[in-house]
Image (cartoon, rainbow, N blue to C red; front, side):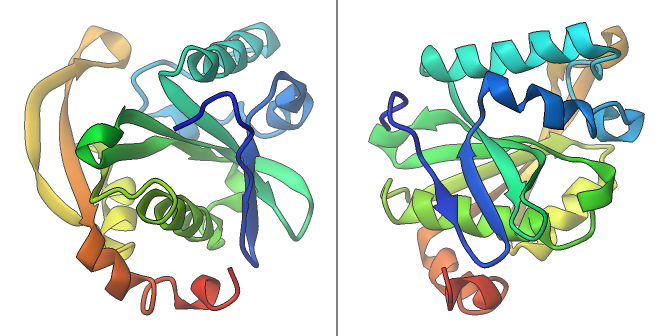
Length: 198
């Protein structure tokens, strides 16, 4: 995957483009909501300085080839609604992870996440020729787990004491995946409204 090349993905509902430092002002309007960051390994940015540091680190992760962060742009309003990323890339083995996803409260439960996942899965299984796409979350994050199931992902299991998280504790992480043959079915069922036009 060429991290130096700007990737833009689009369907009828959402546009994904490279996350940039210039997205700070729009992110500032939606980022300071504790519920968004409740289950993330790092605490929520508490102020503009911390948000700027988080954004800078995200852009640096792309420059270093560790992760490819996208801005999620709501096509209806033209506003940045949140972010998502490709990460843990092992393209020689035909797999990657979709994660680091959050949406501002006004954009939650609107179908925007599903539309964004459609684009990421379509590109992963198409342009990047993946055989497997992984998703993971804190085992306590039931809304995220349910969202992954609704996308058609299969829950594979729980890695105990998998990684450090907020408050100095170690979290158990639940893994999900979608495989190439499953994607061919999901694109015509779960994602049909987007696939027909995007």
